Picture 1 (cartoon, rainbow, N blue to C red):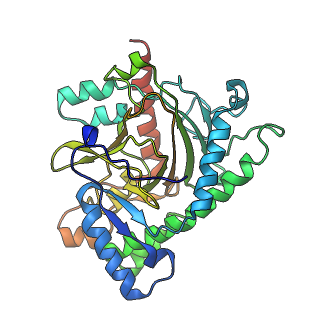
Picture 2: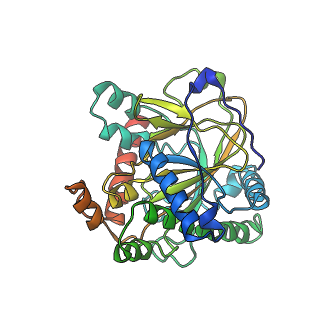
Length: 351
């Protein structure tokens, strides 16, 4: 999908997300060009855990087709989409979720807040979106939920092709992160081994138009403030905007405006742990910028093995003089986070 810079100071202020060129990693650059790109990545990413990436290696043709596929899917009647329903459970995180499924992602953020005012606000923030989640066909722990034959033929084939294309880009970005942290060869091999490609998640998102009365409700948003449970996330968006990241220095959200050839990337909870906190998991949200319009976005979550142990790398612990996080498996962490969201969402839905 073609994007443009639509920065609006009326709702995002004067700040913006830094841009990094990673073509050295996606287009077989030499060692020196990779080193320079990794340094630039480190200096910009350690600020808020988010950047915009140019030179990401994904063709505009495929991105445009992905948005067209997403729109065609979400335009189908509800009864057709519900032929591939997301189960009412944390695993598998696959299939279609309706706009009224009351899965309020800001609930996890509320639990992590120390400010009572923020805890109260985030605990009551309501999402307004529908989604379709899928992954590798070889992931036995999280099997895909597909539409039956005869319902949008071609959907499965394209989305799987897009999934594996984004895996290539993600592996290149992972290499850039490894070099940026100056990990040892053994640590680098260990981090790569945690990401064989079958545990990632591709999500198609549609944020329907919001009624005037809901748009005026400060507790209704496209998606509440949250961090991702992934290693990191790539985010493609249409021209309608609304994605915002937290600027830690000012404690305010700043706009990640749609810009030609830019994909946004944010660190997730798992890589914050791997990096011993050098790269923060980015708090982000999607606000109602154009309530009368639909908004489409496509996040790709690079995720580690479910039973993989996530912990700070020893060389970073030695360099920093402390270990910020205890070891945890990906599945243990994500199951706990999902349950927090689901429990809080059920409470909210009864208010």
